[in-house]
Amino acid sequence: MQLQDILYSQGFGTRRVCAGLIQQGLVEVYTENSALAPVLCADSAMDFDPEGLRFRVQGVDWPYHRQAYVLLNKPAGTECSQKPSTYPSIYTLLPSPLRLRPQKGALQGVQAVGRLDQDTTGLLLLSDDGQFIHRMTSPKKHVPKVYEVTTKHPLDEQQVSKLLAGVVLDDDPKPVRAAACEAVSSHHLRLTLTEGKYHQVKRMLAAVSNRVEGLHRSQMGSFALPADLLPGQWRWLSAEDLAQLCAAQTSS
Ligand code: URA
Image (cartoon, rainbow, N blue to C red; front, side):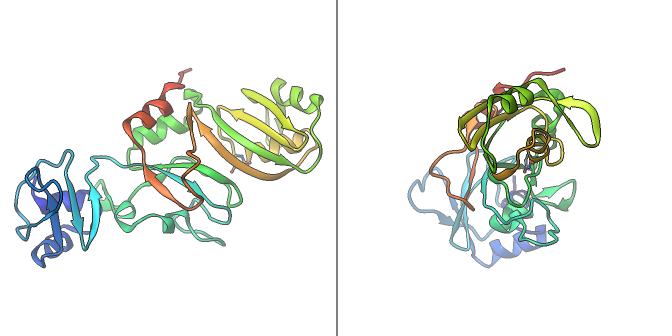
């Protein structure tokens, strides 16, 4: 694959911009013979095997990923929208190549795998793989999502059993139930859901006469948000992470 096409596929801009970056001497490549230091490559048509390739653009290292799967620890006060109405977009927390990866000819970048409210924190996935996004968000796949809920009022056994048995939300006659629900302390509930309706946790808590004061997503499938990823930070997902995310899927 030509170096300019590799850069284009990774979100470094249009093909013309990528060719320009290379021809201006701003791109270095880590080849097998240069394990330590990257080598300048000013030929935009030079061929490389992209799998496993690492390169450096304007001093920033970038590993080739055929498709992007990333994890963000979403901070409070951010919106999961490309065009936010009130708070900054989560996309501003990502480097520009992740926002400019081409999809079907347009530089659309990665998309959030489902949405969290502006005040919700924690585990948020982003990808440019439409099938992956569908698999992780489809209610038919039952991917468990674990939420740590801080409640305004003390929790009791009755609330927990109602959440497990199913509660009716205002706009929907079909009851929704928690796949798991545990009162960790008087104001801390650990709630597992396998669907993702609008404001679902907040509406479920309201249905048992309580109220959400803080909401944090800690786990999806059997993949837990790593403790060393601070709010606002992102990282690539590894093959093991993806296996953990997909392990808990079932279909119906
Ligand atoms: N449920 C909610 O109410 N809000 C979220 O952000 C996620 C789940």
